[in-house]
Image 1 (cartoon, rainbow, N blue to C red):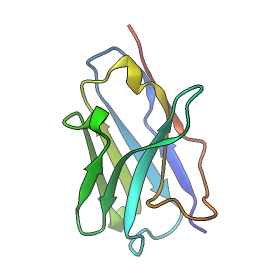
Image 2: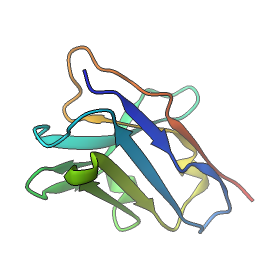
Image 3: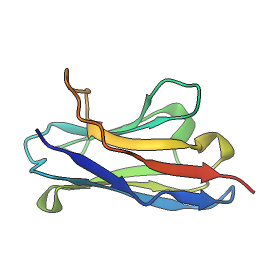
Length: 116
C-alpha cells in the first residue's frame, strides 16, 4: 500500500502563501485522482481539492481562486499551492487518493496555521 508523507506547513500571516508537498512511497501513476484534505480542530476531515491523472481539478468553494493542486507522477508527488491564506484555512492537511480508499493510509499530515 502506498504511504504518503506531507510537508510544507507552518505558521503564516493572513494573506500569506504556503506550498504543501506530498511524497508517495510508491508510484501514483495508476491512481486516477489525488486529493488534498484538511481537518480543523473539532471538525471532520474534508476534501479541499482533487486532481485527476488527466488534469481535471475540483476545489471546495472556500478555496477556489486561492489554492492550486498539481501532481508530478514522475516524482510520485502531489502539491498544493495556497495563496491569500485566511485564518479559517488553519488545519492539518493530508493527501490521499480520491475517492478515499476503503482502507486508507493516512500520513501524519502537515499543520497549517494562519494567524497574525
